Image (cartoon, rainbow over all chains, first blue to last red; front, side):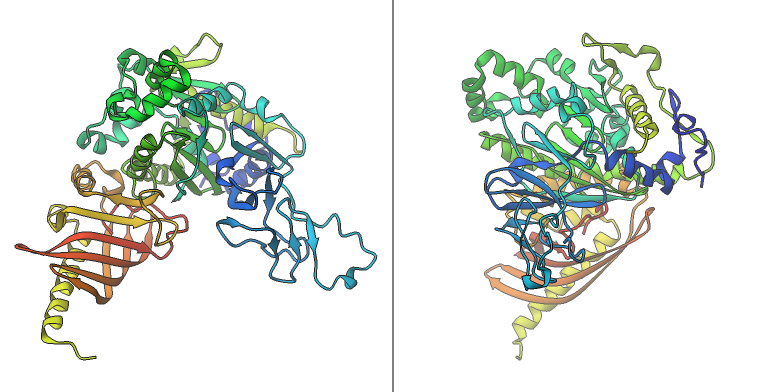
Length: 421
Length: 163
């Protein structure tokens, strides 16, 4: 296995159009990523609709760290670490539920939904001690955009709005597909594990070069128009949104075709209730535009992939161990649409999904391949000669180009070369 | 409890069916396996527990008959890379019991352990498997097969073979 030549920093390992193989499998690199990425920048944790009522909680994660997302009586969403301040015991062992408090089974210390210690057994043993600092540790910063909750283990740093930048608009675009302007996460998550590095996944989510090959088995037997979107003649684009966020923008193809709900492989006649609600909510002209454009295909660095009809939440566990948490997007106020979203998602993704079984096979083969000694570098130069700026000054390329991968690695290098907190 | 001769005969018939189905899966005989389904067959592998509502919640696999056919066509395409090369498999099926008989239909429960070997390594899959078998002119057919994986609430590796 290659050892990363570290003396000159990450600039030695990341060039304009090449990255060093060790970045995918060296455990020392992964340990550094935890400190400089996963436990520092904004990481997507969960959606507010997963804890709709006061007292609701759901188990989430930031990289290898479990995080409990709760909603308190005042309606505020909290992110708490699952560790009793007394003897370190886990205070919550359920995936989800509703409770008035978390009670540690070891010595019966009890915590409110905001993490405060509210009761401890045999209190006279702590006479004269200030117990108010003992609590379930919160994730230091919590912020949300349109219900998407992010957490950061760094007490200080860029705001969520600064972090998201132009990527915030892609989430807004997603919410526009709901007649009530909101999405919900209610269908439960599949958990699909791969023996691969998280960056192979982050990069592949916006790799428009692979579908024609990796997914040919399903495009060939299903009546799917997806394949053509990623063909050599497609007018679709890929885009670097900055801060590591990237997207595949299929709107040019959908606008060229000009069929409402064509992006979803269906037509207004088949979803009359949804179309009527959209027309009422946005007016026929804007509703038609939204239904032609479809929902975004965006990778919000490092771990939230909005894939048109589902979301993936990537959880990095080790240099070669990653879990994809995936579920159907549900559009508030669109029951007929939501049923199809669930069915299509179930067919496509998760351990037995028509698409993700093969993506995941590629992730694992790449992981084994990259551990070979030669060539030391991976090449990400596709389309560099035709990369250009769009009207907003953002780098774009043909849908099959590697503009997103270059953007991800530029940002990764900045993060990894930053001074320790 | 003593079984009467009829019950004994049905159990033997069910065992023969279940063992054959397991062998067709192990040996990747996809077309023959597909022929074991009724026209209204449903193939279900729930996630996050054994009693979720598959119409509302995500399942690992929830195929109606046309999606079963699509799954088989993908497996037969030669380009479904998570099964090219194919997993080497052995299903061990035990504890077969008849749960209920209702006219032409027999509900069956059993325990299953699958040993898989593929490019990643070796994986064990443990499950409670339930069948709803229907007597037809061609013998027993599967109207419903539910595979309740023991660890379906945890992250799972790719499951692209027929379980």
